[in-house]
Image (cartoon, rainbow, N blue to C red; front, side):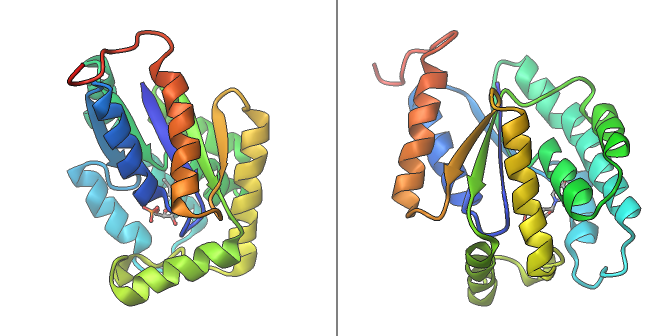
Length: 220
Ligand code: TMP
């Protein structure tokens, strides 16, 4: 099973992913955590280029191709083999981020994005996508506080440095994708306190764990 998390900067994905992994492991799932960009060795090199604030002159098409390259490698080297081995893969950002950031926010043509996503994904799609939704003003405030405290790398701030209007487009893009694919998306209010967000996510995971082929919980 492939589970993805999406959301604007500062939406708390990292914290929640740790809770999700802990919960699924308790239920005996073999969980692999990964992220985009940067889920492979090659991808980490692409990530450094993509997020370096010095690369402010990067053309949107270049950006799109780099995300697609990262995903093509990630799917083939890591995600598909892990899924084939029966593992539960949780990915911090995936194909929807390209539709939203490069499509809705940068304004690149959707057919081009769809085509590149298809090539990169090779037929794979997430089974469930959690969208952590909150107003960009609050997300950016949290993200910059983490950058100032050193818990988020200052070398990766090219997107945090974008305008509020850009981040509003990202948020609206995610919400419109969630409306278009209601069977796959679970929208969670991430402006609530982290415990409430965790509760909401885990209650959904519970349903997932108990449908299909529920494994026996560890220690039971
Ligand atoms: P992260 O800091 O959550 O790891 O995300 C890295 C940045 O990359 C984030 O600002 C969103 C952006 N991004 C895209 O623009 N397109 C994509 O396809 C992905 C995966 C991320």
